[in-house]
Length: 55
Image 1 (cartoon, rainbow, N blue to C red):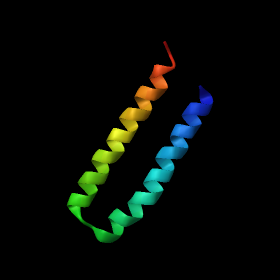
Image 2: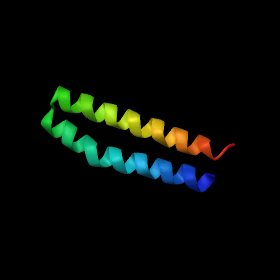
Image 3: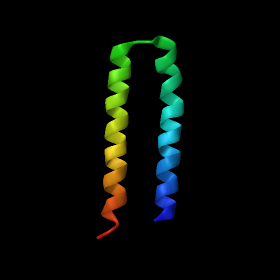
């Protein structure tokens, strides 16, 4: 289980490192909203996959 948590943290960090510079450079509100929705969807999927191993 700790390996999955570390992998999830690394995945979130890499995703943010990839997308944040683009958002900050372009300064488009619509792009920030779409990326925000995508990040929330990714976090929900990670949460569900980490909880699936509990039962």
